[in-house]
Image (cartoon, rainbow, N blue to C red; front, side):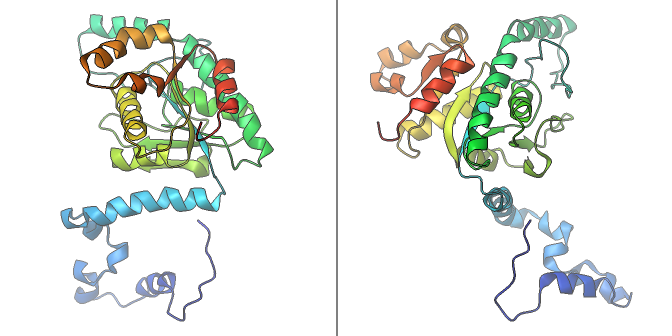
Length: 288
């Protein structure tokens, strides 16, 4: 992160950290109580410090993206389990839920049937990044969850165009690592799902939802709720694959039951191709 020149007359915290490393080794200086609070990992992990950790997790990516001059993003969400149909990506294994072998193989076959969306996500990311490069990488920057599957396709498409992209990874109980295509200094790791989802949306110019599971549904519905309730400005909200989404969610039944308004069905649009999505994003005028 950028080390700005300080305007105040006080001693720099870095100086104190360096000085602390040179102090005499005594029972007093070895005691946890003597550690500088902001360098004391055990102290920072205390339950009472949760509000501070929430603030830090919000601030760190925000400050880094501000320093990189990133003004708007194109959000790509979708399943970690959808594979590269060509089998050529530098993939990290998608998470596998412990279950019967037969159920695992059936799930794998189902994900393979959706593999075409990997190519569409990759193409959309390439198209949007080509536009991003026209603004020197400040606008229309691709942001994904930073993992495998559709997320990898998004970061990979940005790399295809020669641009940078953002990955918002999260620590999970099973092993997970960022995909190989996220720009390293725009690759973030989160503890809190809520803060991660805020960063998905804070700069969003468009939200593109590919077929996915619980995580994708969670992100999709939270985003729709924010727009529906006026807590977020409307942006192009694109669901890739009408057949998939209409089988998964009976949107019309929600409207007929009165649990959403008929007008809420206009908050999103179905698309089938990256070209169609790019045209909608390009034509969108805020406030219309």
